Image (cartoon, rainbow, N blue to C red; front, side, top):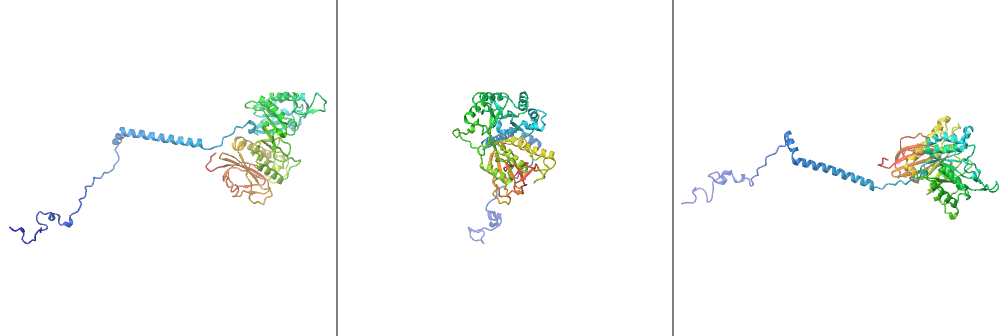
Length: 498
């Protein structure tokens, strides 16, 4: 039987498309795919949950557990951030305010009650006029008054507890002390150049406040018991010695209270004052609370503007370690009076102002000088402007830490200027707050150079000026100082909102 049943076909041939063969069913070998595709998953069409489905899921135990963990995570994160902020604030370096005594914070005012009687034509005693003047002194933020001439210049040692009869009686003086203390104004007695007559010898024999006979100590105790807050002497007095000052210091401490510590003020009258030890015959500075120094050298007549500028520059460049207290000193030209007052109230230490220095000494004149914004014929308006400047300075000093105990930095002007009197400037800094004090004593305007003090903050706000005509914000790059003008500017570092 033949193997090839078809006959016409060769051995092993299979007819395409005939019979039930594999190739015949696929329509040709080249049309058959090598891999069969996997079945695709059925697509999910998203749609929001219905109200019933949402309520069902929200009320489930799993969702409540998730919400609880989410709330706990939120509050834990908030507490961690708060703790980190507190840690940064606590650990960040910041200046610590030093404790100040009352005499380091207050404004001192020198007053001679006898001069007040001249303004009243001697109608009433000086103590009564002084008592009526207390509200005015309070409006100036005066904290202490040094009374001159209360005790007669020449007096016996046994009468040191008496007052000058032309000023009033002792009960009137006691009333003045009581009302001053109620107003928060402390009273100090000036004993400078006091001549004490020795009762035991001839009337021409005099001794000094260092007398050890007992009269001096008794008299000092008497005045302290009356409510006097301290005494003032001169560095030329014989009582200004190491031994006497130690005795006086012990006496003052005996009568000192927590809120009214009794003090001793020494007024410098010599040209140069050097604090040394007792071996050199000069009182140790620790025995004296305040040393009153003059900004200007002594002179019988007002110094010219260039000499005033040179003296002030030397004082500022000296950078005293003990600024103690400052007074104007010698006479001042009318056009410089307000500038000196701005300087006095912004320097480190305690300012000591004499009666009448808070207003211009030329307030009764009608002469128009340089800068007639200051010297105008309307005396009342000019007086009010001077008082407003003084009040602005005293109140700013009393509430600003930078002016109370801030660091002092003298800022020299190295830029070339055609002005014969270059300006002066210094900085009072505390933390991120800076007070820039500028003075132009010359008769020409002076713009600030962009290269001057490049490390200073660029902007700030005006605090006050001698003409009381500068308000609002200021940029140092565009500031122009007017002739014979003093300016106080509060600067802020970048990012500070103090």
